[in-house]
Every structure is written in C-alpha cells, then in structure tokens.
Length: 343
Image 1 (cartoon, rainbow, N blue to C red):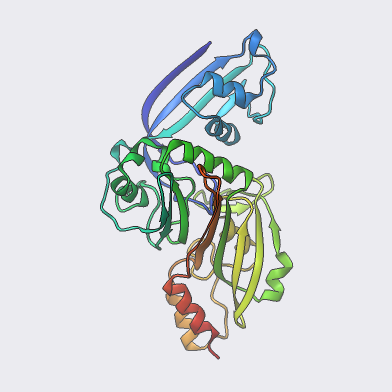
Image 2 (cartoon, rainbow, N blue to C red):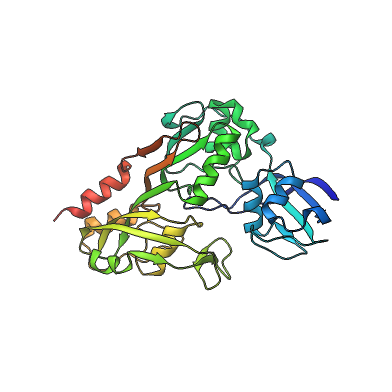
C-alpha cells in the first residue's frame, strides 16, 4: 500500500554533486511524502527497482539519488540502492522537488558553444548564479534558459544536469528533454562525463604533483555550514592533478580532472593540502610574501576563485556520439597568468 502527501514549502536547496557545485540558496519547492509497505510478491526486489515501480512519478535515476541522499529510507534507515527488500519493510520517500512557477524567463545573453534538439553546452561567465535562490531570484542561468528555451520549464531544474559556482567560469551541459536529462545524469554517475578545470593556485609543481591523486572524503564543515571540508566519514571525493605548470616562483597553473563531483571539491581539496586557489573568498589563504608590488596588487585585485571549467565531454544521449568541448581561459585569468609569468 502506498500513501502520499504534498505541500508547498520554503526550504533550503539540497546540494547536488558538484564542482559541479552550487550556491546555497532557497526557492519554492514541493515537499513530497510517500510511503509503501513491501508485500509478499515484492520480497527480494532491489530497493531502487521497487521504488521505481511504486513511486511512478520519479525515474529510477532520480530515486537512486534520493536513496544516496537519505531522502528515501527503509524502516527509517538509509540503505543502498541494491538493498533487497523484506516483507513489511516500510519504504519512505520524503523529498523536496523544485518548482519553477516563480522563476521568470529573462532575456539574458548566454554564450552557447553548441546546441541541438537534445542538449545545449554553455560557457558560463563569472558572476552568474546558475539557479535562482534567496537573494538571486533573477539574473540566473535558469532565468536565461526559461527565456531562450521555453520548453525547459517542464524539466526538473530547467534541464540542468550539473552546476558550477557563481564565480567559477566555464562549460555546462544542459538537457532539452527529460530523456536527455536522465541519460546525462546517469552518465555523471557512471563517469561517462569527463570534466577538466584549469586553476591558478599557490605552490610549485614539484610539491603539488606529490598529490597527483587526491582521495580525501568531503562533508559539510562541522561549524561553518556554508563551507565544505575534508572530514572522516564524508562522501568519497577523488581529484586528479593532470599537469602543474609554474607561472611564478610561488604560483602554478593546474589542469585538474574530476573523478567525483562533490560540492566545492577542487577548492576544498587544494586548500586542504596547502595549495589554495588564487582569489578564493571561502577557502583561500593569505597571499605569499616576498612579491613585488605589481604582482602583489594583481593578486589582491583578483576577486574571485581562479577556476575555469575548460573541457567537457559526454556521450550524446540520442546519437551515442562522443562529444568534446573546450572553452579558452577567460580574460581575467589569462591576464593574471601573463603578469605572473613576467620576469
């Protein structure tokens, strides 16, 4: 037997995977409460499969996400998607579903790298919030998508598959159909999507490359709830430093690949190891001493994290073609690199 209720509420936005990360915000949502008691003929089913059968309004991929987030429980406890259900188990889904009814289309220019009937690839500028929230009801990428692609109003998160921070620049893929969104979400889980970033950080290549694979769990900071931190018991997080190039005796340009996509993952991992990103207002470190005046002023005036999503690849959800996209460094990062590289 399945029971359910829904209500309008104002609740904080839950974090989806990301550095590929997102802003902490609030927006109007539907709170969904569903319960189902396992019957004789359902015993032995995988949790995710049974949930997709009884909670028909949600895809199996969505439900797997709810299971991983702890929004879908069995007898009040979190389980894995492969859990085999038992007779009379109570499956409960208490989830928050975003509602775009208050999100208004806005004629905001967006830099479209590629588009077809199924996907759009966008090069996001610094200063653009991806999704509306408290204090950011307008001027966001979602507002722009709702204007340029009106049909996206019918999609969860207006077709977003992942997010990056307001002040991080670079590539995002957006789905134009529900099928494409589900397919790309699944690709993120099975790592068919690859993402490379370039960033400017403190440290020299010889020190940084000692940590070419950073495998450290990330969770919410214990006291500063808007921050993430490396913590025992956190979610698995793996970052690969592919290259480290010196641009100054105290600073390097990195090519970083994400294996997982935890909130603020690159920024947290590098800061934890002593290689904080230039300009990072949350995880940054004091500017290195001994710099000449020109370099010091340039670093002081760089007022965002020096992080750019420059490479994105995925399998096209309809054609099966391998897609790959590049976005050059934004002007502010290139100018800083050029200045720091001067003798």
